[in-house]
Amino acid sequence: MALTAPTPAGPPEPAAPEPVTAEPVRAVPGSLLTQSWLDLTFLHWALDPAQVAPLLPPHTRPDVLGPVTYVGLVAFRMHRVGWFRLPGVPYLGTFPETNVRLYSVDEQGRRGVVFRSLEASRLVPVATARLGFRLPYVWARMAIEKRGDTVTYTSARRWPGPRGAHSRISVRIGEPVREPTELEHFLTARWGMHSDFFGRQMYLPNTHPRWPLHRAELTGCSEDLVAAAGLPKPLAAVSVLYSPGVPVRFGWPLRPAGIPTP
Image (cartoon, rainbow, N blue to C red; front, side, top):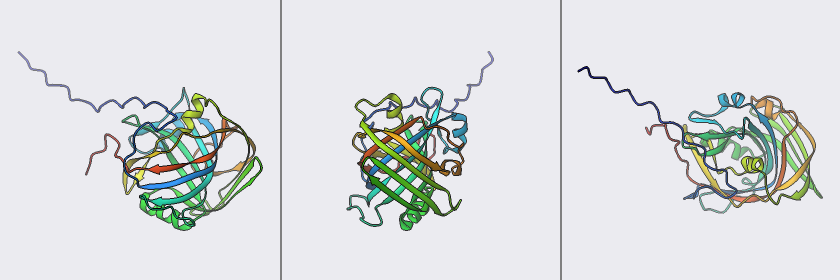
């Protein structure tokens, strides 16, 4: 009787994405970084997942809601970044930031974000994040002005290029969001990031209280940060939200499934 050679097992199927939850989806042991994110504005535009997939790290894919994924332009004030459980730094750890981010899911089903750029106004944190964490931080001239119910964020890139890439965003803060929609949870309830840490693909988990969200009206937006990040120029924003902010803690990086340990 002829013997048939066993069929080699292929790679395991990626896990289904974890649920989208308003509270942290997992415990985060340890404490690598602490900080607060204050006076945030979230702007989002829909994108074809095929446009996003080439820009994501290995072992991740675009996270989708229905047939689309999203690009976010998020402006806020970083407050008192601290290492481990040490007190946050008042000057070097406090600065305006504006980031361009995409939405990702890895082979273990862990949802997260991928940053295409992060503008910040302090050169030392920018250099530390670029050299130590391989994060695409850039040094920019930035300001946040709040008058009554209106917040304006401005940024002009200094280093590295493209020099002069900029954003000016103004929003009018509206009523609190009592019951966020499925889309609003999807865009804000993100409990980790996928990136290249110390030369290795990693997942960095975070934890924070549930977002206090407000509806917001976009009263002005002039920017080319999204295009500078290699993405199509946005049209009309599909979601505009504001939050007074939350305290945040990052745990130690985790290695996604499918990446061998050296």
